[in-house]
Amino acid sequence: MLAVIRREYLERVRTKAFWISTILVPVFLGAVMILPAWLAARGGGEFSVAVLDLSGRFFEPIRLEVERSVSGVDEKLDVTLVRQEPGTDPDATRERLKEEVQNKSYDGLLVIPDTMPDEGRPEYIAPNVAAFKLLTVIERSVNNVMVADRLTDAGLDPETVRELTRRVGLNTLKLGKGGEETSDQGQTFILAYIFVMIIYMTVLMYGIYVMRGVLEEKSSHVVEVIISTVKPFELMLGKILGIGAVGLTQFLIWAVLMAAISAPGTMAAMGMSGIELPSIPAQLLVFFVIYFVLGFLLYGTLYAGIGAAFDTEQEAQNFQAMVTMFLVVPLVLMMQILNQPDGTLSVVLSLIPFFTPMLMFLRMTLTQVPPIQIAASVVFMIAAILACTWIVAKIYRVGILMHGSKPKMKDLMRWVREA
Image 1 (tube, one colour):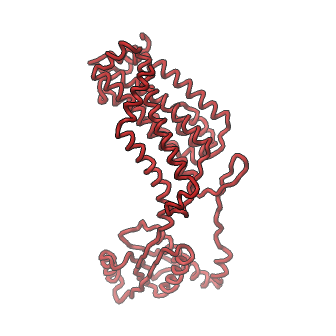
Image 2: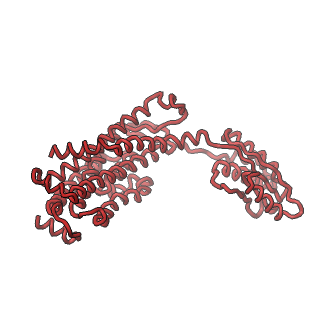
Image 3: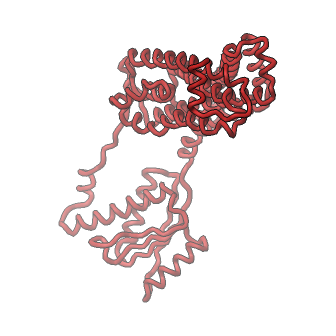
């Protein structure tokens, strides 16, 4: 069996695909973790907006409010409002300004109805309505001006009311196991999402490697030569462990790269000193590897059984999709776990062996999971792996030497009973 493990391991780590994926995944993760913060830090831009104020009263207050908002919130955002006279035909003026926006003379058109602030809604017309910073500043400025106008009509001082109704921001602090508090502005969510996606992709990828390896040996009849010296069970186990070792090698390389990037001074040397990367506790990394290994052994065993039962990947598609569905379900359930990681449903789902690698680990990144639940999840997974190995070994023993027929579920069950 050691020879099989060695062959499977060396055959894959020597390929270009292994090293390309080993390099590309950290690059992708780095882009996901760093680019949003980097772009946010450098975000903004220059915008020129035409303002068609049909009331004739609000252009100047809105311009002053926009100036104040931009200078107080984001100095990298430059918004210039350009007054437009309605003329004798406001509708014709509106159409002309729309054409000028289309011709790039302005980035957008803001229309203030003459019924404001009592009725109607202001309009912002632009080819790009996804410039969220710009839209936020304009919407907030127009809203502030309209509210101030209403307050003035009611005999109240807008500045006094604004001061009294000033919003209070919420500073979110993550409470650690030892009572320590760390600021968290979404880093936990990003960290959880990235790690869960890594487990999903690697378990799926290496599981399919196992299935394709078995299919290739079976279709080329190489397996008939191999099992003359190795038992079918040893061949299956050797293949799973060998490919699993490839995955662990890749994880080790990624861990070293992540440690290097997270080292003090690295971000400053890269010219990104303003970006704060989420910290990753060592305990979390250990359980990340544990759940990957358990998840791979569980799904790799199932994929090995599928590979042994069929002659081609096309024939195996239905059963392959069935197994893959168990990997997709946790992704669908992620939002439930994110909202209530300690809820009853979250606890139950995370203890189901087929969902445990992703959902239990996701819970661990979000909250303090009781040790008894972690231990139970590991025990349940080991029990599921042993049960699946016992069943799949029987299918493997019969299916690996069968050709020319596409087995159905009842055939697989018969192989398990009779093997």
